[in-house]
Length: 243
Length: 243
DNA sequence: CGCGAGGTTGATTTGTGTCAATGCACGTGG
DNA sequence: CCACGTGCATTGACACAAATCAACCTCGCG
Image: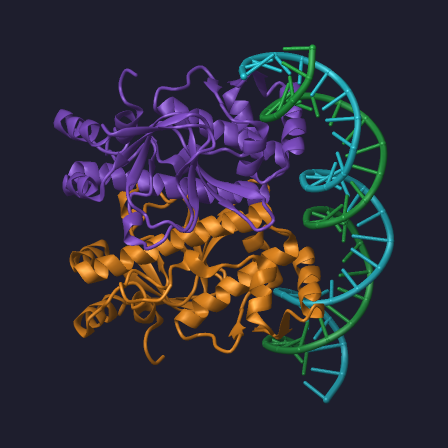
């Protein structure tokens, strides 16, 4: 891995110095490897460490009594889970890994030294706000948009987020999820995800082969899905950044 | 108003001293009155003040191109909107008032003096985490539950939250929302909200007259709606609190 | 008195879920 | 090298929940 997605991402949120970047790099040195489907931390547990996805995809999810699952957040490489959980006494949901993945664990004491650095603290707070914006947008997506627009919106978001950490370009990116996992993200049935993907392909919005997606015309797909990237706040908090 | 819901709420999150309570009281002295439907702050605006609802109900919402609206959060008396927004450059959604309401405005500088107080800071952070938990639960609600369970869950949540600030007791509380507003919360049609309410009434889960709701048997309704209140974290962060 | 906002109800359509079968790629073991 | 099993994608037939369209009702208010 060339430059860490974690740093690359936080660079969007604040003007970090090389020393800041070094400090961040050091904080994510201790990693653990998980197999697809494993839990990083489970519902009901006492929150311990903060996690940063280094490679692979993870998620925040909740399983209901009837066995259905809602994925409430996707963590891509560079994403941090739950900066402030240690305040709480109990996880009200699980954090799991969607693919084989490498996840860094940061102890609370290390987090404190990070947030003592004002630039890093700003970057982390920015990232937290962006996560919240994303969650809100997912609610809008699931609550208001029909199936085809819902998936369109999701693909647009994933592309922009992956692009921001150097993992997507030219409309092409990997989506290493099964259709069942996609279904748990958008609140649909796997069968209906399948059919909806077929519709999007037929309409020439996207092309897929294996687990690779190509967005044929981003502007068109974004319009169709009602995607409007301001909620990701990728212009960050930097004064000079473009909106 | 006897004791402020704002203080009453934050008391759940940390062990405040009387001095802390005084400091909080003073921070919410400047209020403005809004008429139902007014915007407290609009999408696209530069975030300025932090708001606390003193009386009435407010919400966070987003309107889509086709005119449909998703309410992403309900702010009850005592709830604070967007502790950290000032980090961002642009509101990606609107804050509006669902009923006639009184809203306190806190300037960023005042916020800073509040968060300099470690107990208050803990309480505010706790409240922020509870808000996030609520948002996640709404996504689960809209993404996975059928209409009747969805409304059941919402009523359970509203009851517990109102109860926590002294505005509900014995299963009875006011829901000063139109069915159209309810629909925007749960991602359904007003017509379908109406029919679903009728089902809940007929099943003797709830009774309603005017805008007052009575939950006949909370445990039964909670079970039906899959409501499990841990996400509200009302046991807070206090060591001695019961779970 | 008339108007408008909100609630209620009915008939119908449509999007999505459900159930079930098939196909396909891949890995494993005989 | 082939037989088999498994996980995932795909497809079809059908059921059902929810949206849509439209009418009507009630009540508070100017």
